[in-house]
Image (cartoon, rainbow, N blue to C red):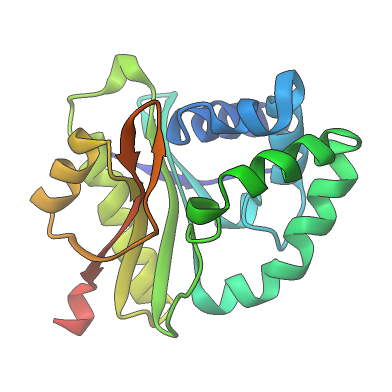
Length: 207
């Protein structure tokens, strides 16, 4: 399946926001309220932040955008860190207070996501496919593209974080060679104990 680098257009920004919500199980709405998709789209337009068009590629099925992968290197993360919070404050406005309050509540897991990367890591922040296109091997295409991006930038390992309750995703990642390499502190919500799992896979060049 063909991949295209994201372009900073309204169409692409809208797809990015939709996919980000899918990948996070609508966590952005919980953090930012009803303007979440608008804020995600604004972040997409800006360079040098984790949610930028720079780090996003879309998967095509014919002429349709069906999936997305967003990822960056540990070096990119160092560059992005200063902009992530600044841009969130800019576009979220007063909602930034809500974002911070819920962030404190979920600190045990949110501080783990995308953090503590090693040099040579390529971090996959989001993988998402529209529900009507699932079951066609598109996830493998997106992860294969992540391999290509990582190798092109001299990275030796792909890493991603996944909710420990998402057994379907964990199983899918294991099938393509990812293993659990770390985990966040656990928390209990509604009687269920959970956390984030860090999964990793060596790139083909590192094998």
